[in-house]
Length: 151
Image 1 (cartoon, helix red, strand yellow):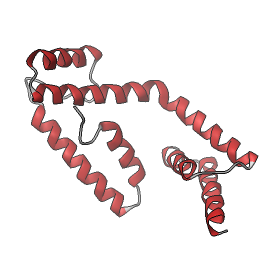
Image 2 (image 1 turned 120 degrees about the horizontal axis):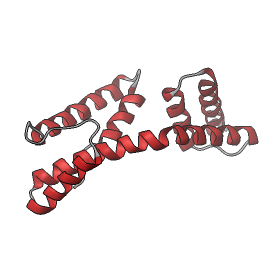
Image 3 (image 1 turned 45 degrees about the vertical axis):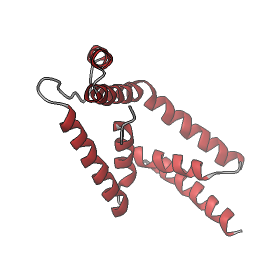
């Protein structure tokens, strides 16, 4: 089952919406949809867990397979999404941050051609960790791309 919006997408939307009223409105709408979806599928009998255990997710998977009920499939999909997001954040977030930052610094230093994807990655880094180094890196990439566009 494909969720209308995942927990990871919501988290990223929240981070990227800071200071932008249009993006804040989009995030707020998606967050409301997510909360409505959660309240529709979870109750005291089947509680929603922000950080579900692997065994809880597995029990929801088994129940969804046994019953074939769409609500059970939705509960499993939501909890699997939460579990996957938490696992990713726990194991990979720091590694991806360091790898992305070093890749961007290397591209800028070597004078390689920069892309809009690089700009997006730099913006994400600057929003996640708004230190001076990341802000400067984002500004450099943005400036170089705007200079290329004006040529």
